[in-house]
Length: 284
Image (spheres, rainbow, N blue to C red):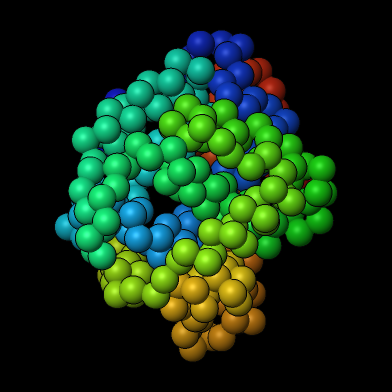
């Protein structure tokens, strides 16, 4: 992911961006711990797809500088969620320019292009799905199906802007699409390498690695049993599935508490840009 310019989330006043206050996206993308686990789940699914595996692993900095790669990806997600319409478009344009240069052959010898609309749909859906599943599990378990459908429907603009020609617009459409794509996923060494790398990659140093590894395991746990089998992964943390879920839930709650007390991140700045209370960032 190309490093982009700093985004001013405070300007221009009254610009709602692509989503705006009260949208499911503003809530889903607000908790950094939850988003971290969702992003890991998404990348596992993406790396189990042959063409995306090659594009990500052979053309990105994940292997050489995973921390900066994750920071850049997170910054892009914040820009298109909480930034103005201009900031979002600048991000789409920058990422598209980068993707246009990514071509090659898969590790099995098949040609691919990163701008292939079908690949862009897969990347869009896995990310949207991973973030939503994390939010439901760790922030709003009673999120209505109507609001989940709205999340996918409103998020379609991001998929189209990144180059997809079609994206699913509801929970049912996403489930149907992912069940079909599951048939083409495969177990490979890159997935395991990614899990190892992401478990060690933290900007807070060695002391934070236990937390990072916990989040990596939480990402695996988000995947259904069929997805885990297709990708060749399973939860291996000493705490087990129950312990991982309980610990990450507590950490997510703590992160929400800190954000309410001291938050001045992109989401809170976007609220000030729109002259609304930060209450719109939290479950009702």
